[in-house]
Amino acid sequence: MMEKQLSSIEHSRNVPKLRFSDFKDSWDYIDLGKATTINPKNPQLPDSFIYVDLESVNKGSLTKEDRLIKEGAPSRAQRLLKKGDILYQTVRPYQKNNYFFNKLETDYVASTGYAQIRTKEISNFIYQYLHTSYFVNKVLVRCTGTSYPAINSTDLSKIKINIPALPEQQKIATFLTSVDTKLEQLKKKKDLLEQYKKGMMQQIFSQKLRFKDENGGNYRDWKKKKLGEIGKTLNGLTGKTKEDFGIGKLYIQYKQIFDSSKIKIENCGLVNVSESDNQQTVQFGDVLFTTSSETPNEIGTASVLLDDVKEMYLNSFCFGFRVNKNTLYPSFAQFLFRSPSFRKKMIPLAQGSTRYNISKSSFIKLKIDLPSIAEQTQIANFLSAIDNKIEQVQTQIETTTTFKKGMLQQMFI
Image (cartoon, rainbow, N blue to C red; front, side):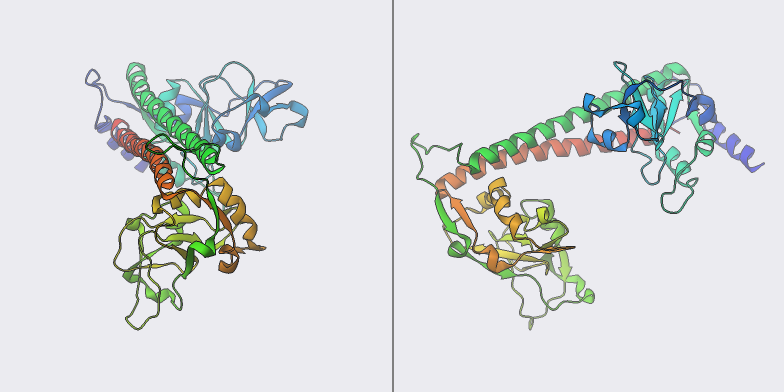
């Protein structure tokens, strides 16, 4: 009785908040299993195929290298795919990590880790619908299990969905597909810019690419310096307990250093520091390093403070490096200490087994090659311009993602 009341209430207001003006009819309220076939029976698998699982989907592309011989394939390789099939991630909380299969050129077989959904309607409309909060919330409450809560195909098929007539499905699907295409283009553009920056950094810091001065002449050769010759290390916070954090003065957190080559002060935490505390503060131009990490490859990740600050402190799991004046251009430092050549020197300093640490005494013995301040400035300006382009594209990605999220909330019910 309650189910019928809910259905009638839903049907009585069965139109979305936002729709194309040429459509007026109410949407139908039906089981997902009536609009689709979930885990259709498959014929015998081909002798070889490209295997589609969570790892290959996350990789972003399916290639010939993914092809397997049937006899050597994982036992989970059971779902023979057709164009238009949807692979739905059934394990919580990955219900938006789905894949719309739109390929024809060869045989593909998916893992049973996905529910295979073959639509009877417009497949891309259903694919978009599966990402709405309306649908995902219904899935989450039906997930069962402890280690890996998941929804089974029977419960999935019984979830009610709202669908319009085919012409409106097609128009919605086309519109949202165009948004997805825009997102894919922006992400590809960002990837290409990041690859370009990586290549430029390799060329610059190996000195295969040199800049010219304002008269077109060559700068002086880079000079080799020990870090201990050009600056000194700084300690992070000491003697603080859990109760000291959350109020007080700004301090730079571990994640801020790890996430970006320059400190974003809007992400600082708060720590209680009294006048009697003997704590070191950080200042503009300080290079900050992570002291501890879970893997050797992440040890000594660097970030530079490029803002003038009055009073700011540093996380206890990090240390600072303050460079002598007129030795290192601060904006250049953010690229130098994340360059491939410097990382190759830093990683071997990692000590430990389950957690890795670095000693400041070993750090200051490292040698670096330094160009003149004038060339440092040119390098920093060049690489910063690429970073600015990457940030602009990232902003576009975030804006477009937010736009699509809003469309999903308003164009579906």
